[in-house]
Amino acid sequence: TIVQGSAAATVHSLIEAIENRQTVILHDYHSAHGSVVRDRKVEPFAFTTNYVQTWCYDTESNSCKLFKTSRIGSVEILDEEWQDSEKHQKGFIDIFRMTAKDDKRYHVKLSLGLLSRNLLIEEYPLAEQYIEKEEGSDRWILDIEVAAYAGVSRFVIGLMDDIHIIDSPEFEAYLIDYIEKFLPKITKK
Image (tube, rainbow, N blue to C red):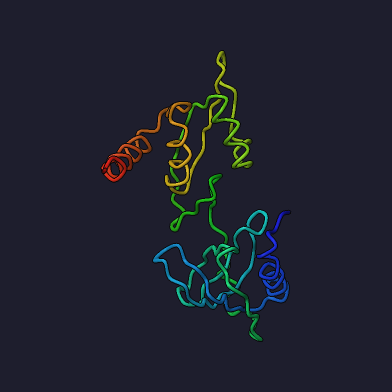
């Protein structure tokens, strides 16, 4: 387990709250959605690998969400026990650390060269269990379900010359739309 020094106090407070089934306030949480910094009252109940994110029941939206530990300013443990523990439920997280709001999953199948295979395993170690050597070839097959195309797209676009998309027409269409949407921004002088 690796925890960045700056997040150690946050992680320790969240562990204490989880063990004692207490509600907390995540002070100055930096949300990526909407670029807002504000306090969040939640019931933390689990962590992802290496304490990168915390599963919490958000009392405002009445739903379970992931909160990135590095985006939390500080944690205030309240003298208030969980009120909604029966609603605490972890959602699906794909190998690219993306989550689905509605548990919908998308199939993606890729043929990887040595470079993309190695980088995938180094950057996303959970991917290794989904990679198989392509018979009679110096390539590997990654056959997975993802929560969203954003994570896998970032990986594929960065290594387009070493990755081939197989039997994934919806993913191909997503990539084409994404590239066409941002290409004018990139090519502007």
